[in-house]
Image 1 (cartoon, rainbow over the protein chains, first blue to last red):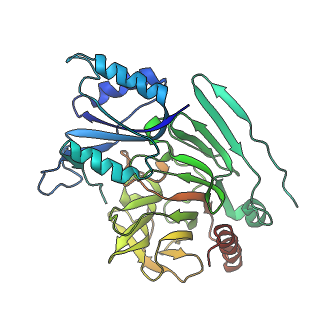
Image 2: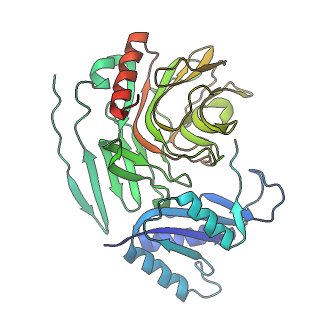
Image 3: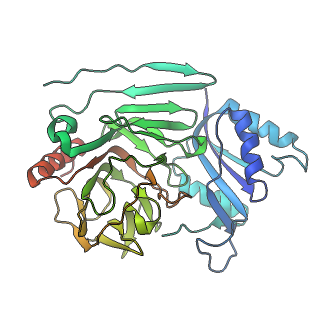
Length: 115
Length: 263
């Protein structure tokens, strides 16, 4: 079965609900751990509030990814998965570089970690 | 005494393919045998690795059976049977992959008790990636934890040991041995100082009286309530020991350098 690299971006407001909806489809826990903020944020720190959240899957079965994509496509404005952005790739070897590209496409960047 | 060659059982659970990898330890040296009571736990990528949807969902220690786990599918690192110099390796993605055990096992040294953390790893990040990446951490916050990390120092990859001392933390950064490629990492925590060493070098040290708590143990992320500073690289082995003698350490260094073909 084809394995895909997958990444997702969700708004802060939908983070919890979208995680639950994705988990229900996957039959396992889905979370978003990386906080994001606007790329235009002048001097972000680890305390900068997250506007969005990002996750990354190194390899997932294509069937699961398609099921998620279908659910997102069918979601109405009030649904938990509405507005979720899914990126897919095959053999994405550099998750960090891929994340930078994905985030930049949405005008976002990671909130720095606490050191 | 030779150890038995173990099997590779395969198990299908629900929609997920789950496999537990259990291979034989490296020939000629087994930390469990050689270090005896000095060894606390030995996580080896050829043993006790459970693969589930998204990657490694559990990694079991060989001695005490500590079960490092990850319930979130996106945060499961990848596994390769050959990624570490032809040997097994676990590969976090530098974004959100880590394994954890909560609370941290009681056998780990806490407060000012001496102990060591060893890692056989391939540090794959280029110096241009200026993030701070956790390799192992246990405790809670930086001020009450023990942390092994990769940093960029003056444009070069470097190993750092960081010890929480209560109200603050102290760290030593090893700048004389570039932390790129395969290495044996050894971080020593004594009641009065912490030392970071790579391979057979002399290391860097800092005075620190640990005030370590045992809230959480994480591989490749900080031990704070919200995991951060997620790590990268290829990990063949992570060991926890009581303070080792020079001879015991020399044996483990030699074994690790041989496994990694480190010159």
